[in-house]
Image 1: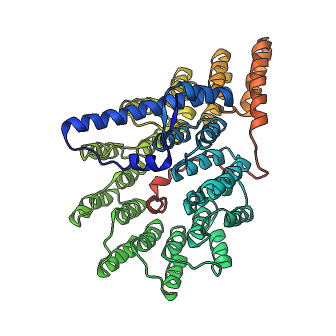
Image 2: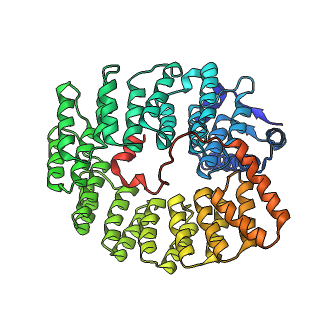
Image 3: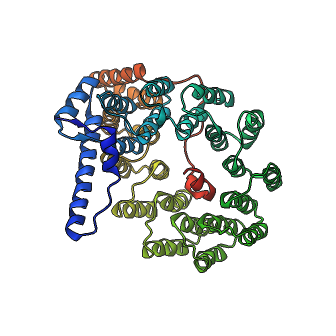
Length: 511
């Protein structure tokens, strides 16, 4: 029987201190492993469910305690594995409708992100309206940004601002924090011109603070405009902080004005503002842009003298410089140094190499790096998968492509929708109808809708092979998705191809 843990008790459970006694440490690790096992069990239940009733029955019979911590982790698992938004929403509603239970803010924001990624905007507003009635305090400026980011990705600036105004009746306080969420969204998803226009049109309704200016400063590409905005900030009495100066350093570095960036760093020190790892990461990136990867590498050592130690993003910036310079030997040495220093390379690290191998058409190196990535437990992200699957298609490597797909299905990483389009193209080009049908069904079972283009290609091959029964089965599956997925009347944007973690200012603005 399933037990729903009330929010008050769940809150206490989430903030326990880790024990220091060896025996207690083993028990603590055992508890964490048990929780992870439960998360995986519930995740499989969600993925394998065929209906809402089936999902509820499976959850009741699996014998797992549905605490806030577990629900947070399950929804996070669904998000990063690109799980079915419909099944995730059914799980969210089922757990949230139990007496005495309240979702966490993390669960709410994650659920809204999952729905937004699938453009199910009507469902988003339904969830928010219900949450306003049950626990309005969970709707935060972060919630505003999660929703607006998905809206802005496919809709106009006007529609984004209209969606922003809808939050006035939803959030506890419609204040500067919400205004900042709107500006941050426009900077990331639209343009600085759009963000600047919206700022000037709405700034009299709110009181801009240092975070407001930091958001707008982070998006400038013109050093002159950034300097002007920095001056406006001082004029209205807003004192710049380390983030403000980091934005200015970043603008100078991206504009290849590294000397000015170093002058800003000296000014920071003179005002007793200590440069942090993001400051140095910008300098590393700027030195790379002016063709000085070796000097950039020295920054990794110099920053330690000031008591600041490089993180994964700082190493990634240095590795990127060597990859651009086609000095892969030095890049690999830096990655090995990261591991020696106790830092684990992430998918962004590997993507720097994948990009080089993709453009040089180096399949053996790409495959070797992919195997290393999997062996170390670093799961590829969507960009990693796209570099690989496109290279497999280019060289007609069906076995490698199917291996990547099987790993995605088994371990739950990457975008099934984006990867499947390229995979089905390859399989159809090579006449691999059986494999195409198998991958199609795996995708459907995971709750993802294959594109109409891919479906039509497989359909043609099935008709030629007289596999009418199989074609009817696939058509029925596609019809189900057609009734469930809602697409707004907006223009789609480009597929996600940038690793935003490479941009140093973005790392702090995400927090």
